[in-house]
Image 1 (cartoon, rainbow, N blue to C red):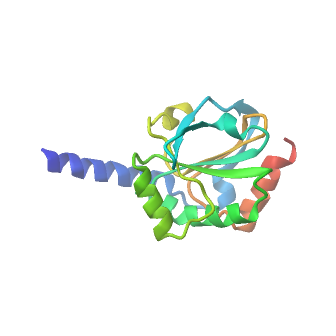
Image 2: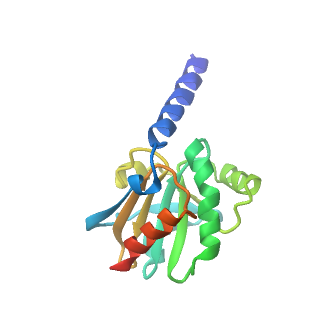
Length: 176
């Protein structure tokens, strides 16, 4: 019975990851929200074990990325988010990858193995993000403006260093 549960879990994880790995360009996966939506109150756990909220980042744009270490598209996307974080002015925009994994140590090990050095560790330990943010899968990225409004959404993985990603970020932050 335990083996069947493991096989089912692996199958569901693969299907969830496959469902989010869309074909097409970055711009096909990205949309501006009109009207913007108020970001829900959301608690996550940092590397230090302390609880944090999105409100901690008020006054700055937040590129809020939901991902998991077992998700292939997430694993490909995260290093581009790390490189983007190195290029951004952290006083204006912060990249916050929130893992749907339960184990912060596993996330730290993933970061070390993939040389991710510019991103914080954040964990959705209560597994609330999928319902709070209407996530259809991972990776999903939201752009939250300085007033706490979700102004854009990207479903599926992408290269955040591509010209299309920079153009999208420019559009998402232009009028807010």
